[in-house]
Image (tube, rainbow, N blue to C red; front, side, top):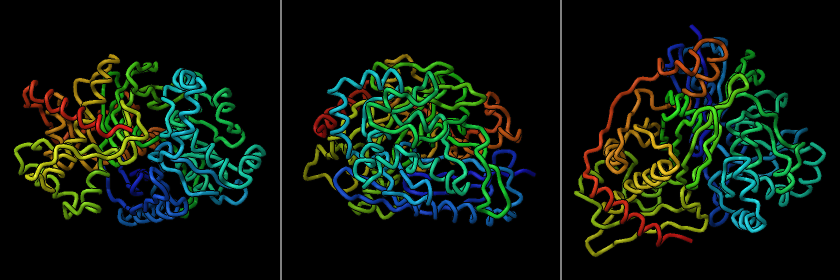
Length: 489
């Protein structure tokens, strides 16, 4: 029986999962990834910690599955997107900690570029907004703050990559410097129509083309790794949100998924052509196979799972993440309390890097339970904001498939269905990000069906149907919007 190993390198953890030929997970390994916060709004990761965790989790997953490494037919990689690294071509050593996608240190650089009239070009070429979320200004910051990096990058001695590129470089012992089209489309440097790096944007951000990786299909021959012993081909790469859409079988126009992880990301498949957004959503590459790209409209919420972590680790309002469900369910409503989780600014549709976390509506009767419920509710309200913007762009889905750690909270999934007036579908396999990476690798070998038939691997576990009255959900959303205004920069 063929087996696929998926390496899922996320924002707060790294995990590896072995899947069988039916798309069923057999065993996994996981490591928590330490977060570094050197300044307000700054978020960094240690690249060596990422690499160490990747090696350890792959070995652990194969061992727990009771397999020899030679039984692994291929490896697929999925990763936190936009997180930016530069490293020495000769030694492979990083020149700086990785700057994480949540990091806001380049907000002023984006503001200057916006004042210079660059935003229309960015939007037209890349489908993105001019925001520190994306990689371009992060690369420029690293080149300006690592001694000698810019001159060395122009000579091709320093390389840039998102996390997938860095892992691929290490896994292939420096033989392959590449990425896939989904990750490239998140850099703010990639023309999603021409499917190539854009020279005008490279000049605008002063980034040498010599340091950029080759852009390949999402299902392709990315080289081989001997990290587990025998040579194993790496045959699939996709950014985590695109991989989740594939794992959720959202392969037809109009199908949507929402991943509830560190942040929350909603993707709606828009088919073979990018859909320009008039309401501050993102047009992005969903995947590229056999040279043909599919596209999606995406909305990004920067803080979702981090809310529960904050409630647990900083506020000490709950002993563990799972207990948040019972706390929220025990209250009849939020008693007027709202928590706006703008810990690292607000994502779509606000795109405010200067917003900060805010709690409103507190009274003498308010306690930790109200704040916990308000934190969970904020996730649903943010998803509703995204769906309303997508609907205005002509891309509102009729249902939403969900995945990620927060989907274990049945109360939250029911509240999402209520607030969004949408059927929410939770699959049997909630590790759909890793499954999507495995599917891309297995597709290359013919182990898994073409994406058009990927529904054969998707099975739903539970549906959550909306029951809330329309006027009540609209009142709640209006109250949320008042709280958001109080958090703005």
